[in-house]
Image (cartoon, rainbow, N blue to C red; front, side):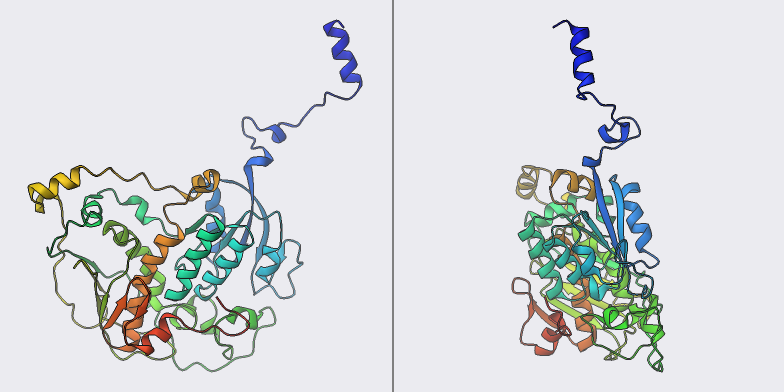
Amino acid sequence: MPRRQFVKTVAGAGLFQIVAPHVLGGPNHTPPSETFGAALIGVGGRGPGTLRELTSKHGLAIREVAKCDVKWVGKADNKTIYTDFRRVLERKDVDIVVIATPPHWHALISILAMQAGKDVLCEKPMSRTVAEGRVVAEIARQTGRIYQFGTYFRYGVLNKEMRKIIRAGLVNGREVRVVKHGGFKVQNWSGPIMVEPQPVPDYLDWEMYCGPAPLRPFQHARFGGMHRGYWDYDGGGLGDMGQHLLDPICYAMGKDDTHPVEIIPHAPPAHPDVTGMWGWVRMKYADGVELLIESAEWGEPLGLPEKRISRRDLNAEELKILDALPDEPALLGFGEAVKTRKQSGGNADVGHHSICLVHLANVAIRTGRTIKFDPVKEVAIGDEEANRLINQPMRAPWHL
């Protein structure tokens, strides 16, 4: 059959169709196969910005398919607007879940989202307790989903020499200490103690807001930004700022896979319900490396100097060992991780180890004593009160 006749024949049979550019892709068009359905759970001051960062920071083409918040009673249509995140996770068109709720919900929603086959971008802190973070990390491994906690300062650590030395086991009894002084907003997020109960606003599902936390009488101070000042939902300024400030330090110290073995606090007696002031917390690892955090807002500083380790401190034999080690690959961003199905540089396991610095510091502050910690079993040694804070029960029916 001549070519012209062939073209006329197949065109007449409907075998050729004009396809819109956005279907196949091309300049200024992303094909549907390369876009991701995204849902936001927790639409407060931070959430919408985190959702937008899927594109602006992480380079993902997304379709915003659902948003969920407990403050939308009477507004939710259960089509694109929800008050119960579980209905969002049932949707087959959701590929990525952005979590920006108060922290007492972070771990549970992350776990359920990954079990539902979703990738997760979760605001910091990634968990509220040590036990929660461990389960998040385990579920991420079991499901193979991509998880990223929402702070990125580790990506900016350019000098990785100390990390390489410590991970190579070349400290060898030397004094190594990193000091973080200030920046924790301790006074800002010390909760008010004497607050009268108030009627629950008509627009708010208070039962769902409390979720796994105790069901307390409603107080405006517990809802919104001041939730950070209550142990039920967060960990004060340390909970708010700690993973931002300490995650890059944890990375630079090469401690992404272990925990301190001793945590020494200096703080006034802690209130059982609201967060408060503290002075400093000194954390020691099994190899002698130390992390000292100072609030600069209460009491006198401990005054110990920072002492980092570099190749100048090593002897010839140690340098030989160090130089034989390969450099680590660059940390993978969340967007690239989603596309390649390789874990991100801010994955659940490394995030668990950095947020545990916050949790263990708060456990020591709340108990008012030194905590001896087993970094493998993730329990306090011989201290049941501390262990009740490390693995706190959840309000039924919620559980890990």
